[in-house]
Image (cartoon, rainbow, N blue to C red; front, side, top):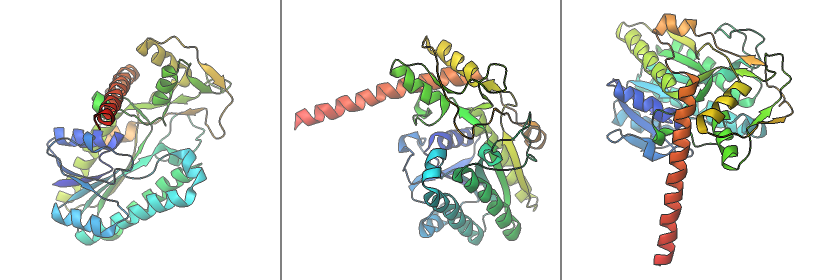
Length: 341
């Protein structure tokens, strides 16, 4: 089998590519490089630059590389930006998915894995979020993920495609420094950025009904997340080989909650920083606690997270420092070039 991985040059996508290659799976990366980096794509893995909104480009890559399965990670994912630009998010995420599924169906591809998100749940008032917890997304981004799941399942049933929708929680860490998260959108890199400025981590609200007053979240190491994609892809291939076309929706998390204050403490200790956190008012819509139930994915795919929060912190910090040094080197090179002229 050959899997097309859309968004495979991004932070999560590059980890999925790495894990699938290590598992002996043949893959092709399709990425518009709007946020991805071609340096993340391993040597020997074909990279095709293009957008999932471009039907001709999608058709061409599926045909040229004889694609038999798709892992769809491409899309826009910033919650705040989605509130400001809902039309943009619906166009990029849902229209892009529609075009991709049309091409997949017409080409006879029979395996489709969709990168979803725990944002589909909104603010669930439960101890553990199961796949049956009602979905009430709070942002256009979350809405596009939920609507995307509906579309994937409907297309799968109509066209005989085995599908999987993976709802993952808070992703952190890095398999190697080169693949680290360099975008300042998630908690860990946001804290690192403040450390670089000599400031303490920013905590939004310390008066929640939790043991230490801060929000509790389920953090998953990106390498565990990538391995879950491998397990799901294998299950889809198994179903297809048996002539069975099913759909699967699972959470990807550790099933363990870590408070924001606890995570900040780990970040301080893991990096040697001693900055006291800065408490700010709550952000609208932040639930007190969101922790995944990871029972279903263990039962169906035999997958379980193996890495703890400390590994997330140490690997993320190593990647953050490595990328800072690489950025300095690039700046020096540009400076030399200017003077060479």
